[in-house]
Image: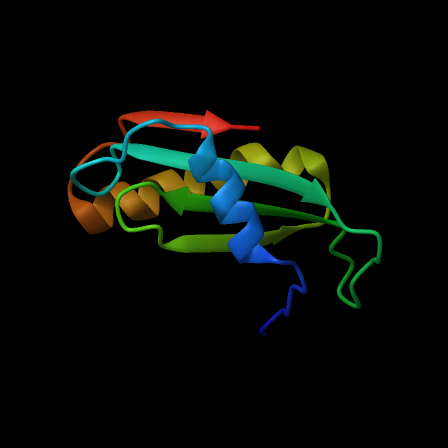
Length: 96
């Protein structure tokens, strides 16, 4: 099932990248993250959303969450997926 999130992701990404003075040289050196609450409850019951942005590639992953407490298991799953995919560890994690 595909969930559509209507946010200005480019503005969010630009904001996250203003917080750092340098950019990384390879994937997973720095992951930016932001968790926000939607004003509208989605049909499947998602109220929160978290995005992860790789500083090197600026590739962005957005995950819907039903509860704020779902962040940690979502991050752990994201971390495992990315570290297996890139065969390296996340070096730094920055969250708002």
